[in-house]
Length: 236
Image (tube, rainbow, N blue to C red; front, side, top):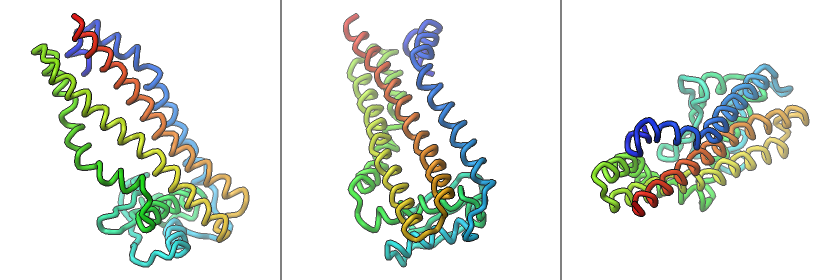
């Protein structure tokens, strides 16, 4: 917990008061995406397309023939794996004929289209993953050790690694929004959904994108807090 290396109870209260806007933003975004998905999961699409059908339609629209679609367990576990070139759709999406399922599946196929076209932000994000995975494990321990032993260099290193993870989240935003734009373009051009259904799919994807925005906001607040504490420790 952050307060452990910045002053126990006083630091605990200060940190969570400072982070309250970010915590609320994440909570609201999470509730919104669940409510929106639930709302449009109960609305079937006129063409009777399943999520798997929608993913295949988007792949065909972009001329992609080497990506497979498969079902995975869980709820909202949908993702595209660029290593195996596989779109994995959750049980609540793959065989569902709901508007929400079509939107989510088309979005994941939009990610496949990004990789196929060499979309720059997705290439940058992919290149950053190994470094960010290590950085995410080391950032807080370095901040803690630097604070405990009053070693400013360690605190700066931890802060830099944390900043890198925040930048990774920033790069993720255009990737997610662009995948949705690609999905919605095909949905409209190929008439996968009617006018009102397309609006519903857009609402589902927008709500999902807002969770990334809220998470970034929370991380930026954390980064600013850590920066203030690190700079403050240098002045003492």
